[in-house]
Length: 210
Ligand code: GAR
Image (cartoon, rainbow, N blue to C red; front, side):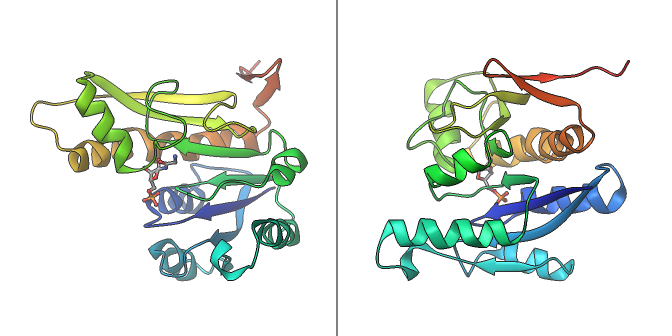
């Protein structure tokens, strides 16, 4: 049974998609051990509580230095003994020591087709604003493993979504979530939980059923 810890900062619709997929059996061999937010007002925390999932808040603002936060954050993660850490709209930089300790065991959902519209400054609505400003006709979402860079780790799953005439950033964000994010994030967890993913030479490989 894969022990999953989900990190969140906001509304938690991706967390909800994972909870629903685990509860309905679309994700197998996995349980959500806990949810950690950096923001005590995050609606994601209520979603966790409604489903009886342990949750806690730990914010850089509570600590005098970033090093102190990083140390306490890693302790909180370690205490949950995760096999997989899922960043589901988590907007805090992951401490390097955590990346090192949990290499190839941290995944992130990003609301674009990496390598487009990713990296520093591209998060949330800003991604969709940039895509509309550039006039691209296809957008999407990516699940990738987390390495020391920003959105640079091995790509596990991607799903494309069409831009429609008259899209606003909000409308596009919603369509990318519905058609891509809420599908590929649970799927990625299911693949990992069932031993179907390997990272080889810096690339994520999905092993086919024999
Ligand atoms: C999602 O669109 C997620 O892809 C994005 O934040 C949103 C969180 O929504 N993440 C990033 O931009 C990370 N770079 P949610 O809290 O409703 O899941």
